[in-house]
Image (tube, rainbow, N blue to C red):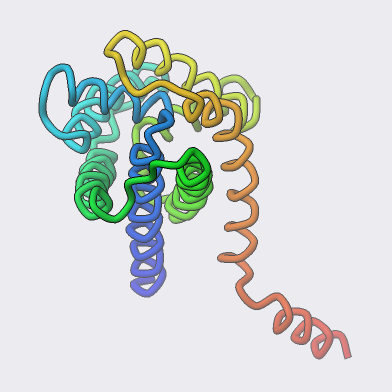
Length: 216
């Protein structure tokens, strides 16, 4: 049991680190970020504090919103994920500010596209650990459960709500935001079953051999 817990925690942390990297890449692309990250950046510019700090503050608020929707006690453990994610974003932004400063549109698009893929990969990995989802991702799962729709629908719906809020605070809205709204859900929907199959069945060839031996 201890080994399983360690494995889940490693996946949890690894997924968050990858997710934070993806968010930072989209911010550095200067083409617009996801509506949620655009809101964080907008709040950071308009009000103050770091992007990561607002990640934690918004997460704290959303925990109570999720509690009302789910009609259960607030999941304060999600604040740990928000804290690590916010810290990761701030660290990645600090590290990338001198390494990734794309000026040509093609490089910006590569940075943006890579960021979107990395976000989907990181989110799928840490959600698979089933440790403590970010409140925004918990909301995505709650909406999926309440509506019976898939991840694409719930994630897109959340993106649209945060898009309105990001515009209000003059967040970095651009073509990257549109691409995130359109592609964020499908990318995550692609990675979730893929990561699940890879992590739950890391050596399918060996398992097939075992099944053959068992049947002989």
